[in-house]
Amino acid sequence: MDVKIIIFTDLDGTLLDHHTYSHHDADEALSQVNKRKASLVLCSSKTKEEIEVYRKRLSNRDPFILENGGAIYIPKECKDLAGKFDHEDSDYFTIIIGTEYGKLVDAFDKIKRRTGVNAKGINEFTLDEVVQLTSLQKEEAVLAMKREYTLPFVVPGGAEEGEAIQKEILLSGFNFTEGANFKYLMGANDKGKAVRILVDIFKRNYPEEDIITVGIGDSLNDLPMLEAVDRPFLVKKVSGDYDDRIRVKNLGYADGIGPVGWNKVVLRLFNKKGFV
Ligand SMILES: [Mg+2]
Image (cartoon, rainbow, N blue to C red):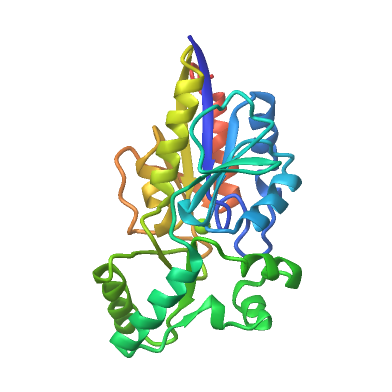
């Protein structure tokens, strides 16, 4: 049986450097991914248009998962991956998992009123404020603000205020998660749910192949993705520590921050006898 490897990867702080958003430190492993014809599925809190920029930079042609599992995009050139889709345009088949952005904005207003906590959604940020918080270039920040399925927000107060908001989000029937720069209000989506749906599509369409799934992340929003793969790996955060909220069976710890750890883990996987 042939082995097909699918690598699901977070972007910010994992494949991309926390400050520069560069994948340079992982380039050696990325070229191995191409050489071995492994699939590389970008699975990020980023928006569709942000991820498209990185797909171009990486010459990536695989499906991708955006906004913390809000939707799965399957490029039309992946003709083998047939299935049931919610939407189709000239470039993609789409599976929608998340809740519409407008509903999230309304819900967040109510949650803020109920808790009395001073929290700020990305819809209330100016472009300059997003640039300052994320270190993104202006044109990238414009794309980051084009949300469809998640509402990123910050809580300027302390941990107690953050917990009050988190509790109220869950009580209101929504989901909460956290990435490098933002906390997130969202519907029933998470990265793991999207990974499972996409893996099922791969398995249905490649019945002759033994599919091995790898997941690489750095933050709390990656936990469901890491739970959904065969080989989960955590890279170090920019502080040099691992996120200790991530507890997953068989979790591998990459020895390096962000793309440095990514590079080591993927090269080691490919060098392992029997892996490919
Ligand atoms: Mg991250």
